[in-house]
Amino acid sequence: MRITSTVPALSFKANGQDINFDALEQSKKPKKEKKYVDPLANWPIRGLGYTNDIGIAINELAPATARLFWVPALMYFGADIYDKYKNKGDKYKPNAQRAFNQAVFQACASILFPAIFGHIGMSAFSQLDKYKGQKLSTNAKEQTLRFIKGHSALNDVLAEGRDKDETIEEFTKNFNKYVTSKQKRYKRQNFLVKIYDKLLCNCKRGAIANSNEERIKNFAKTQFVNLLDTCKDTEAAQKILDKKIFKLKAWKSAGAFTAIILTAQAIDKFVETIIINKFVKPQIAKISSTSLKISDFGNRNKASNSETVEEVLRNFSQ
Image 1 (cartoon, helix red, strand yellow):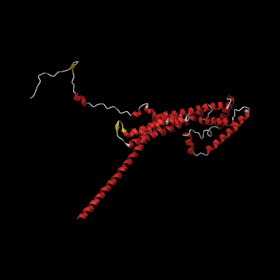
Image 2 (image 1 turned 60 degrees about the horizontal axis):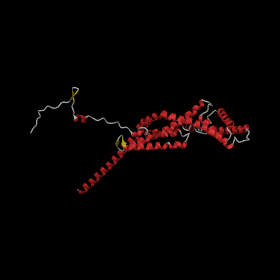
Image 3 (image 1 turned 90 degrees about the horizontal axis):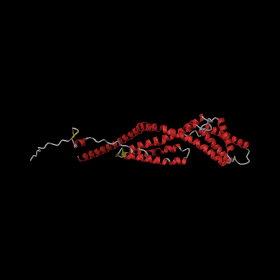
Image 4 (image 1 turned 135 degrees about the vertical axis):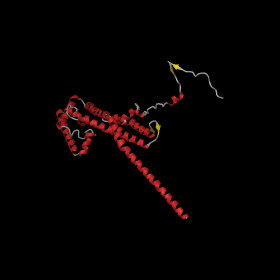
C-alpha cells in the first residue's frame, strides 16, 4: 500500500532565507585534523633539554653543581629518543631508524656542539680582556692570582715581624721562576695542542706563556703589594683573592652563555640538514639495501637447492 500525504512540507525561514537541515551533507564534510604537537617540544618540558648548557657555562664557577645540571638533560634526551622510536607523530609505530636519527641529533645538537662552542666562548671572552685594563687575558690574571694565593698561604707572608721588602723580593723571584717554567713548557707543545688549548681549553696552558712578560710581572707584583697593604692575616687575604678569582670565572661563564645562545639555532639546522639528512640517513639506507640483497641471495640459494633435489628425485624415479 502506498501512502501519499496531501499536506505540504513545512518550510522554515529565517530572515526570508530557507534553512535546510541535511545531516548527510554535514557528515560528508571533512573534519579539520588537529596539527600534531610534540609534547616534548613544549615548554616547560623542553627546557630540560637546555639544562646541560647551563652546566657547561657554570662549570668554571661550580663544577659539582654543573654536573648536577646534566641529570635532567640526559633524562630528557633518553625520553625524546624513546618517544621517537615508539611513535610517529601521534601514531604508535616503532622504528629503530627513527630512534637512531634522533639519538645522533641529540648527541650532536645538545651535547657535543654546545660544549665546543661554550668553551670557545670562554676562550674568546678571556682574550677580550687583553684589550682593556692591564692588557692581560682573563686566564693569565686568574693563574697569577692563584699563584699569589698559594705563595701567600705557603710562606705566611702576613705573619708579624716579616720585613715587607724582603717578602716582596722573595715573591718576585718565585713568580719569575713560575713564568719561565710556563714559557718553557708551552714551547715544547706541538701545533695541534696549542690550537686545542686556544679554542677548547680556554688558553690555560698558554695563558702565562703568551702574555707580555713585563705586564704579567707588574700585575703580579701590584696585586701582591696591595694584598700586603690591605690584609691583616692570611685568612683575609685568601677571601679577597677568592672573590677576585670568582669575578674572572664569572666573566668566562658569560662568554659561554653568549656563545651557546648565539649558536643554538644554527647548530640545530646544521645537524638536521647536514649531519642527519646528508650523512646519517643515506648511510642507513645503504645498510638497509645491502641487508635486503643478502637476504634475497639466501632465498635464491634455498630455491635453487630445492629445485636440485626435485630434479634428482625425478631422475631416480625414471
